[in-house]
View 1 (tube, one colour):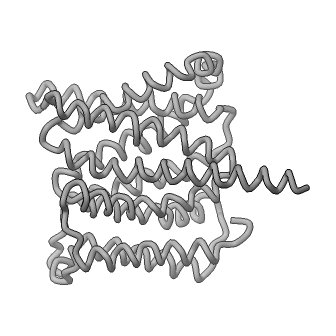
View 2 (view 1 turned 120 degrees about the horizontal axis):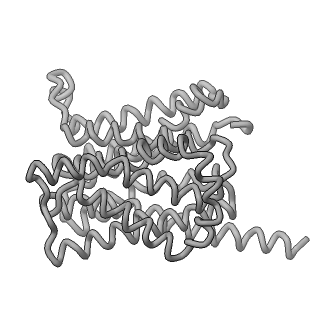
Length: 305
């Protein structure tokens, strides 16, 4: 019994380390998006991101992917929607939003994702939701609203909202739908599912990349920008997904999902330290409301949720 408890404890510690690394990578993605904004066109970045991710994935798990091709073909409609909405749509919007808003805002708005997932789970999966959780969702939405209007009520009354923040809100809705969609029953392994979704993310965004090129809007990066692009492929696109999949296998999806709450914290920290962005009082208020709202609906969630 002592050995079993010790093993479970070690597995938890290992999963926590993997999840912290995952959320660090996701927090860095907001910073990377701001760093390359204007130095590489958004759609070119999106295409390179997913093509590079699939290349790395095939290097490490090509044999597994090929063995699962019959199962992948059976689920092509499902994986297409997941790639289009989750990775393709989300990835495109986050890099466009980086032209108009700060990395701090991008990170904090992503903090609303668990609340939106809860609402989606209730609406489409009939997950149990209680009154206290609803209050938590409302608090989280208020927090996102504070950062979206830059802490100034007159921006709300005049509908003077930052276009970049609105893009991020739509992106969060897309990725939340993707997260809810992951609960669909299928016969794909984690590796096969991720590989097929990445392929569809690349294919679904390719027409926009071609249009960007044909309209003369493509911006090719120079040497230094290629380094950041490489980090985007390696860290938030590849390494973070591998770590997240491994952590889910160790402690399950519910406990792993809670760690998404760390993304706005890491994104805000890196934005201030690396980019020198200012962290205003309204950012602190917004971050507190987002995390407090998430804490409420996590603490009081039903056991059968």
